[in-house]
Length: 119
Length: 107
Image 1 (cartoon, rainbow over the protein chains, first blue to last red):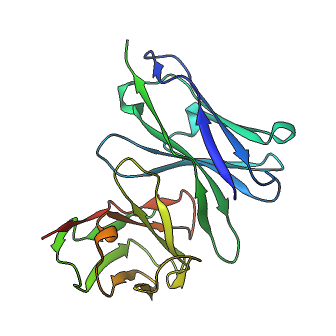
Image 2 (image 1 turned 180 degrees about the horizontal axis):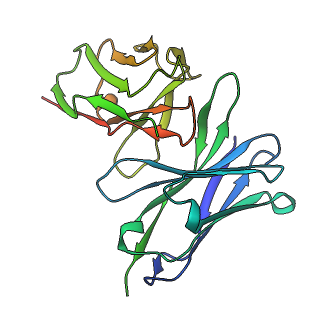
């Protein structure tokens, strides 16, 4: 059974960088797309972007100038960096495994971690 | 970006009711649509992919239909564990975009 677990600081100061890591267990990080999705408190879901295990990326244009997603295949994990954060970036951040092809879906998700941007 | 509009934003229903949720895309997306269920404090869970394919382990009371711009998720007989928020997600092109969600509450 594939499991994803987010980790990282829960509180980030405005203008600083939000950094999260998603550890993948129970399966290889190879051959899938690894995604970050966020959800502000009480609101809907926003796709942030993905990294393919080979290292290619695709970001939401709304965040592209501030986002970097990287992968560490040797440790079966991938990471998110979001620069110059503001209060609007306060959200639950989820990592999720994506299958993108003839059919596309997110089949495994982490439990989510609430990151608060505040001084 | 493709806009996904769900309706209604919330609904009240009783156990055993048939419930239908709609999702409309701002442009044609073939059948590149999924449905996810989210319970409070939990991650979303995949129910339907490719508009009408049931994810393994999901009860058969869930079904999806549609193609192009108009899609529906139907729960044939609402069960206590189905009270949740439902989201559609288009994967036709990037950026991937979700609908605003439909909260299904107990009447």
